[in-house]
Amino acid sequence: MTSKTTPSTVYDWVDERLGLSELAAFARHKTVPVHSQAFWYYWGGISLFLFLVQCFTGVLLLVYYRPGAEAYESVRQITFVMHFGWLIRSAHAWSANLMIFSILVHMFSVYFMKAYRKPREFGWLSGMVLLGIASVFGFSGYLLPMDELSYFATKVGLQIPMAIPFVGEALANMLRGGPDVSEFTVQRFFALHVVVLPALFLPLLAFHLWLVQRHGNASPPSEEAKPANKRKSIPFMPNFLRKDLAMWLISLNILALLASVFPWALGRQADSLVPAPTGIHPEWYFMSPFEMLKLLGSVLPGEAGEIAGILLFTIGIVLWILIPFYDTGKPSGQRGRAAHYFGLLAVFALLATTVIGYWTIR
Amino acid sequence: MSELTNPATIVQEPETPGEQATRRAFLAAAGAAGLLYTAALAYPIYRYLASPEEMALSATAVTEVTLKDAQKLPLGSVLMFKFGTAPAMLIHHADGRWIALTAVCTHLGCTVQYEPQADRIHCACHGGVYNAYTGANVSGSPPKPLKLFKTAVNDAGVEVARA
Image (cartoon, rainbow over all chains, first blue to last red; front, side, top):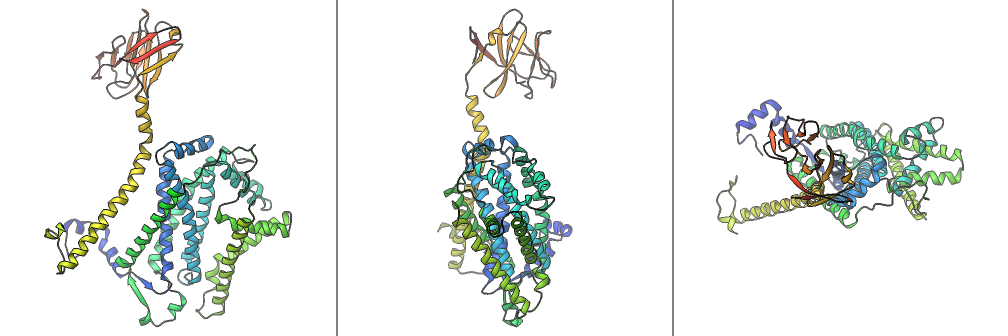
């Protein structure tokens, strides 16, 4: 790195125009707290890395993918004809799942470290929207190969908005591009997946990362309670960055291993006349809401159950999103404890319904 | 290690030779690992992107094409076809002669056109003109003639082969 100790005319020229030394000074002064829970700081970075993998492998898939009526044929070609196409597709699919997983870990670690408290409310809110967009990325990307599984998963998934009173059917038809999942659905999901969602995601991600730079990493309440001279931290450059990059490397290795040893399968071409295959189920990150709706449906049958399920779900999510405005207090506060138990309840509910969901597949 | 004898590295602080050796060994190992990773990522990506090129290569290995029912082509008309991946033309001249040539202009690669009235081959891109019997570049920009193919006409069609 060129620094002030080794004057270079090119560096000075650029510095004068872009203010590199201000950036370098900022990076030098940036620190990251060190404590027993510091491991959880890496998960935001891992999510970012996996997102970059998604962009990169996504562009590679875009080279041969054809949306619309030819969608299945083009994915078949990518998987079986193009050299290493199976690997790139597999990496994209695996990385998508790992990214959702690491975003969830990131979210829960932020939650339990209470890193959403003042002044980091916008970090929490933007993160929740990013997770929302990421799940729409997942849902729309799942249809694109247009094989049996993706066809039926999309068909079932789009039944959920149908239960919304009054506008449900119009909304579902708008998403599908007609009354049934067809090549029109693939075409518009493709536009969503590669243009609309990235256009929303990228600026929001930049905002999210800027906030992290602005406020730094939050310390958990147990650390905040300690006197300032008892708290430890390490410089971001190069100590934390080095560890961050090591985590990226580990993520890359895990991804490479999963993508090559367990290549992502391609089912048979979707055909609306062929009955749904047995054991069909949503992706694991949609399993919990799917199962919750199913359980509620068995308690409250019919339309009432559907509406109640969606209502309950919406309330839960809204409460979750608004947690920074409820739990603003000190570590020992009543509200802090309530938020903590609400978090534990959410984790338990998600895990339990996911397990029940997989348990009851037949 | 032979690298130890190389005095070219600038070390900011005086270090013992042992420290220097471990740092160098570490940097060398990290550099080698980095290269390996780059290669392991770049190779599949290169092969993936080069797939159509390889498919085209196997297509250009074609030495003979049979044009079914082409023997019915009227006098003074042309049939465009693909020889491998490249456009080619079969001309049935007014005097009954059969001529097959590549249809790619030798100037900048446009597809050329047979003009029956003038009995010549013309390239619309930059006005190149070729002889419709020999493929010779007659006027304009083309630097080389169009390549001729061998033709054999039978009851089933016309066989075009590399000359």
